[in-house]
Image: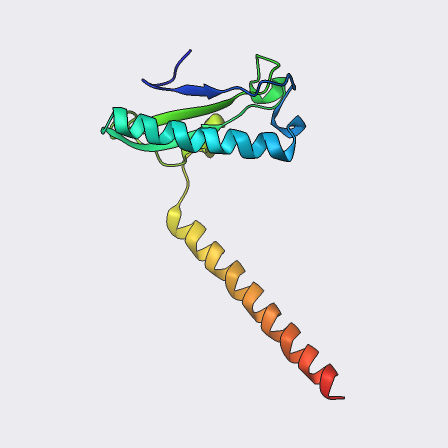
Amino acid sequence: YPVSDLHCLIIPKRHVKDYFELTDEEIIACNTLIKNIKAEIENKDPSVRGFNIGTNVGKISGQSILHCHIHLIPRREGDVENPQGGVRSVIPLKQYYNRNRIQHTFCKIIHEILNEDSNFKNNDSKNKTK
């Protein structure tokens, strides 16, 4: 059941239950195909402005066909009232979020990582000079 016009499924030839059973080579082949199909969709329909890429793994996540397949869903301006959250909407209460809060938290984490990295490098250089 297509979610939007030109919604495509990428289906590996080898029967595996889900994405995590694919080999690295099969994942690369799927990614190549996704990029090729994306380009074809964009050429065919200039109103496409974005994409969602997804796969369901396990019944709890919504997988109903037990053969690996990856959805490539073209998105167009105005196709939903508020696209914020994208794939997060699979859990409706988690779809919307406060961007300022997320950005603040993200910046704080990056700052901590950079400080830890700097402290590690300083300690490492002190150890080398001893």
